[in-house]
Length: 551
Image (cartoon, rainbow, N blue to C red; front, top):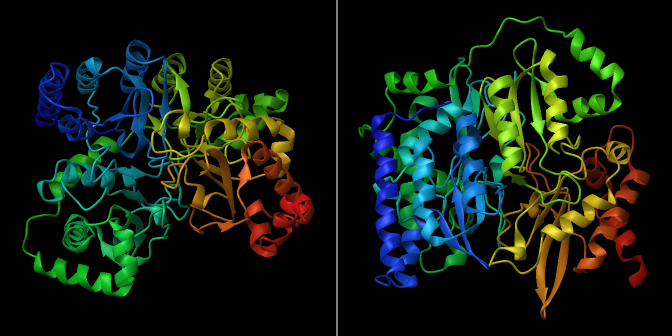
């Protein structure tokens, strides 16, 4: 993974020291909360319902053992012994005391981490395909480009006060594991006609109050022009983005109002004007960055007798490998998904003890490489086939081996009204109710791929718009109700969900999900996923099942 140079280290340490001074002024009463708010948000510190929340940046979801152990230490020492991974691959700590925040930032700086640009109207944490560098279907390692964007965008003076927050995702495979079309900018590496690498550039995606899928504004941008083209996009947005209305300030609204073709024309014109600016990376700097993303794999046979025997003798291990273990580009290795979705617990939560377990496994069995994905799980990207039984046993002992990747209990949920002051309703209890109802590994396997996404408010931190089943909490005269959408997808077949019908009370949501699953099992044809069946039948049979008693 990428390592800071001396300038990076000094900069992050200085930033932490500066924040300590500002916190001391706030504690001494020299700054009011209104005066301090912008300062703390620029350092990832939010004030939520019950306490301060610190959002820690994990660029392109990449960790090593040292970093994860430090996060475990911070959670145990300064929080309640756990953290929450988000759909932005960040880690949130929800019970922070203001007086401790400077100490936490200094601890983060020691392991080349920080909380900058996890809030505010800036370019936020850059995300990427969590299988980067491990999967055979990628054209290049997208982390190289994500790191280049991270360096270019960190405290960029021109883009420090954008009209609204700004999010960028990068992939290099045909399968979209990063939800490109719901980002302000989505970048997909493609191969040009002459074999040159370039990006398909998508702009103007986003969820929230007005969801949009980002249209492609350039089919092919040579990689050498990446940063100058991003600069042109952001300049157009900075110039014309709505600053008078927070609900219309995101770039998705600008692209939709201008139209993708006109927006692309303006970006191209801006790009041509900056042709002679020294923005793009020189080859030497790109090579330096790339050098940090070249793990040394052992030469191994493509098959493992140990692995095959374990599958044959242990049904639980075999089920786990079917759902949580995936092919690796290197013979003799596998990609291992680590589930943070034990039914009945909070999706995305992980204890300090579990962080330490994953850190140990990553260091010993995954070339010291650990990832976070936007579906609130972790993964070990480089595990030898021979080591899979040992890794499974350790994960199982730690409560991290639920065999449910992309199944009905692999639910994405925001913290909702249990923590967040913006929420209208709780998300966590709804996720727990649904997961408990489907807590049968054989039944979940029978159902197959089914992505449930839950948000506690219209800001859509749980990505409900792109769930196969999406659930949105709403407030109806002080009571929590939930709107349901069907047919969304954040993958390469991206789609926004269709409204099922009137909002449901909290105690009816899990039952409604079960009714919709029964419709799917009845209606599906051979090989169809839930999403495929919905697209073939439409919403009518699902709506009839859920609202039958209302007629």
